[in-house]
Amino acid sequence: MPTENQMKDMKQNSIMGSSVTEGEIVCVTGGSGFIGSWLIKLLLERGYVVRATVRDPDNSKKVKHLLELPKAETHLTLWKADLAEEGSFDDAIQGCTGVFHVATPMDFESEDPENEVIKPTINGVLSIMKACAKAKTVRRLVFTSSAGTIDVAEQQKPCYDETCWSDLEFIQAKKMTGWVNVFCLQDDGRASSLEIR
Image 1 (tube, one colour):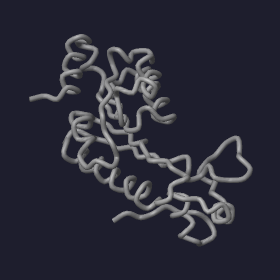
Image 2 (cartoon, one colour; image 1 turned 135 degrees about the horizontal axis):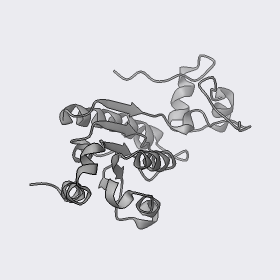
Image 3 (cartoon, rainbow, N blue to C red; image 1 turned 45 degrees about the vertical axis):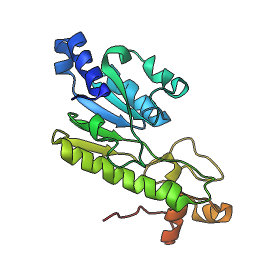
Image 4 (cartoon, rainbow, N blue to C red; image 1 turned 60 degrees about the vertical axis):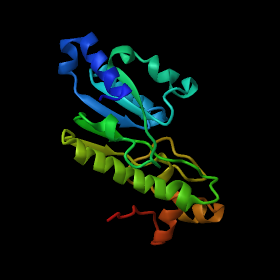
């Protein structure tokens, strides 16, 4: 039996007729966040049918801006999913040709960054990758990092690119938590990414 969200997609298909079959279905995780919201706006403008995952689709304060986007009524559905819940992205990803993973837990004040930020992030990515493999329709997974990995400096820059790295001395002096701290543990003079096996 189809889930409520799958019923929404089916209803959407019957409303939009042939235009839906022309638009590819993609999933955007972390849809209510800054990057996710902008990505959804651009995807809708380009005719994609977007399944946006959010922690609470009924929280109008967090999702109202998405529902007001042009084409949202016919091309956007919201799906409940949480990085901390294994398999919670499966239904949203099923049938999609592309997945944009931009969700990330951000808590710079966490007393337990290992369990509140790092593990949910890693396990969430793995869960999303498994959902993509299970779906058998996903041709591409785009994984973005968090702005928190580079936007950590005393003096903010107007523009960041791949040559920008966080200042490790500043991070260590401020005793920052989460991913920023993990990068510091590399301790080779500049931040580097983690290898997940």
